[in-house]
Length: 153
Image (cartoon, rainbow, N blue to C red; front, side, top):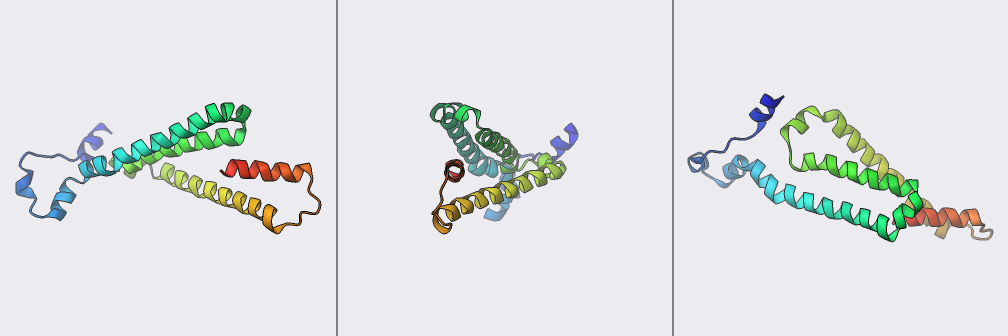
């Protein structure tokens, strides 16, 4: 495994100017370094800001995830896991791209399922507010609308 990691990692030499004659060759030769500095580091900072915001908001503003609301806890765990897995993709680590295809597929499917559930919840809130009859509104109806709309934000 260690030999494979060492073989996949690019070797940059000090005479790179003799190997690079145009812009495309420069981009191809330094693709890992360019990806690291132009995409990987900014993505990591953005992801850490988003996860930090989620944690601060849920701990401080929501007073410990609204007394440990399972939906909000799941969302926090989900974004930490997906954010961590996406870091390996952002940095395009060869080992991750070659050997962890099943885990990447599971992450992709989880993202689709999460997105579909989120969109269905938003559509349900919209339909409850604008399309359904409001003649007989009870506490259960209001609870469902408030729960879905609060967690959709």
